[in-house]
Image (cartoon, rainbow, N blue to C red; front, side, top):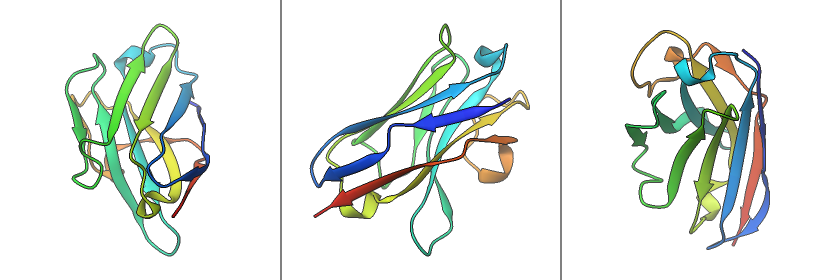
Length: 124
């Protein structure tokens, strides 16, 4: 499985942005997909995950109510819709895929495949 994340950039605080992740897998609909992020000088942290069917979804408390994860199984895409962005959201965002058959995955070590990351910078 190859993952390609894109959509990062420079946004002002309070703004919105959508990240996309394209997957090469022929059976994309069987993958649990997730987004993680790594801020400068910090470890990678969980942001959001979505089950193969689109439900359920799980979010980190820090983004709940501001971020939304969706997927398009027909196009092998997963999205992270981000709104009311804050400077603390500045990070490299990674998409990840879990092929294990789990229904949902929130831990970094549950994912087998990772994209290259896309940088989001939120200015104050």
